[in-house]
Length: 196
Image (cartoon, rainbow, N blue to C red; front, side):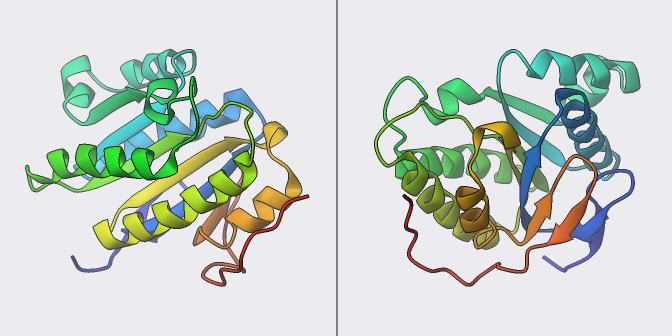
């Protein structure tokens, strides 16, 4: 796949593959960014896998229905509830999550289509969750790179510590906030995570 610059949202362009860490602060801006991401993807004929909370997806869906006809965007948008996807009712088994993600993506690849993903990461409190999230993102980065995907991993900024944010900058080529997208200065410099 040749590298080209594609719009991430209406105002942001990156290459056609990349792992993006998104720490959002306001739900309103989060929904607006998700809608812009999906909209630009559809305009380029990309399919979008959205892994989203069941109380937020209807907000995104409602906005998309104001832009596109149902049939126009439903052919491109593939939704999975993030609670089910991440298994938040049990232990956060990141290898299982990545394997499931790979199966879903491969089923879409069979149709020879370009895919971008938007995933709202969820977990429940448990032992070593910060380490598990960090390890998950390292494995996910490798998968995203191998599959040449554009992939957004979204986290509620109010639910994540500064130390985890710093660790995640090592496994994401880009860092996004509600209003900004920058290259991660730490990307690719993996070091064993330690959390206090």
